[in-house]
Image (cartoon, rainbow, N blue to C red; front, side, top):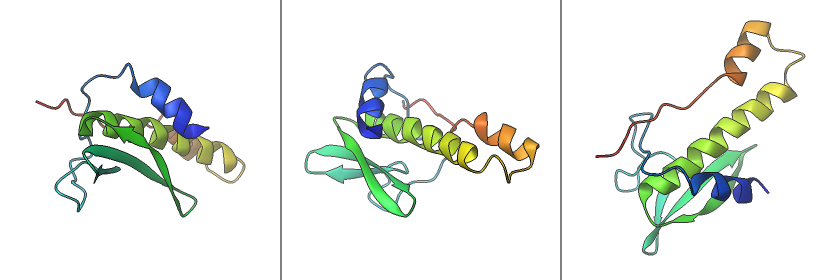
Length: 104
């Protein structure tokens, strides 16, 4: 279900990119993106399990899918742990956004 929501959201995102200024080990691609055949796969670790979010034509589209899913996952975790989190921490997590950098 999460992968379908991500695919729908990413279709209108455009050329958003690498964020977080760290490259994955695989060929300098952004975090959450790996080369897959002649396309790019987007994946996110959820509760210790790697979830594949889809394959995309460009690293930017795959990265956008990763960021949408990551932000969604952080909010789900914040809600799950709301009762034990300090209110300031909860607020920070609910409002958290991944950093974006436009690809040139």
